[in-house]
Amino acid sequence: MQRTVLEQAEPIAEGVVSLILRGAEGPLAPWEPGAHVDLALPNWLIRQYSLCGSPADRDRYRVVVRHDRLSRGGSEYVHLFLRTGRTLDVSRPRNNFPLLPAPEYLFLAGGIGITPIVPMLAAAVAAGASATLVYVGRTVATMPFADELRTGYGDRVRVYATEENGRPDLAPLAAELSPRALVYCCGPASMLDAAEAVFSGQRLHLERFRPTVKEFAPDRPFEVHCVRSGQRVQVGAEESVLDALHHAGYPIPSGCREGVCGSCEIAVVDGEPEHRDDIGAPPGRMYCCVSRALSSRLSVDL
Image 1 (tube, rainbow, N blue to C red):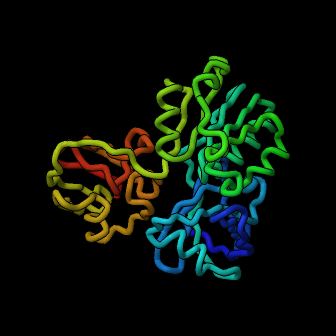
Image 2: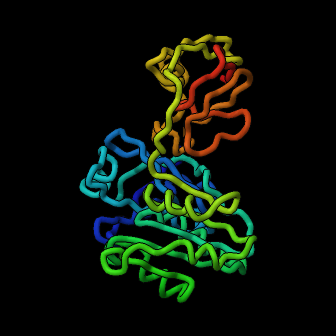
Image 3: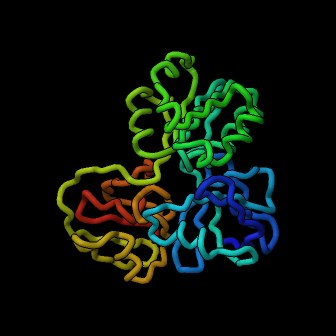
């Protein structure tokens, strides 16, 4: 974790606050557009937020937090109790939503899903690519960055306030794209589902706030062999690999516990994992908060 100080906390839209976190012990770890960090809050919760400042600024991170009416304690604490001057631990950035090189981009953002898109749009424009942003929210007043994006990028940015304009039709947008264009989408499940229905193949890249609903066979017990220590850990049918390893003395980092943040990634040496995450684990890796085993034993690099 990196030690930071909350330098600034200010409202930037209805129910949305921007946090500027200054490195307390020198430069912060580098990051690229699409990255997020785990923020350890003083109420013992860890929450994930996309970085939306400038990757060139190694002294500060910027994150933006919407006050969720169904908050599990994270956004509520940030909005009601967090004050400037507070020391906060922040993880090194992770990027499960990287911006790949392309001559053309379509960015789709819904509500607070604008946060990873802001530095992506800046990077795409700086690289000389053709880039369009479609930004959807309930009203302009609830949409962070709406005014500055329209001012800074002009016709590249199309803002849709659904209470006034309804939702945009994505099909005409798809028809306008060249075959080499990439589409990046972050927002609520309804927007992601609509994007998946219109854009297909390798061109569409999504980042989810919540896991998708999936069906799997009933959970069953299995064994995890920790290769480096030689320890064998039994995983019960009603516990996760993450919890079983924690109980066995392995302090694996974790954040969302839903398979969407990637903080609990471990290396698999042998055996067949059952991947249940929404990120797409790389070969030889698994996210142990939700994923399990199809084989009777998994060997992991612990």
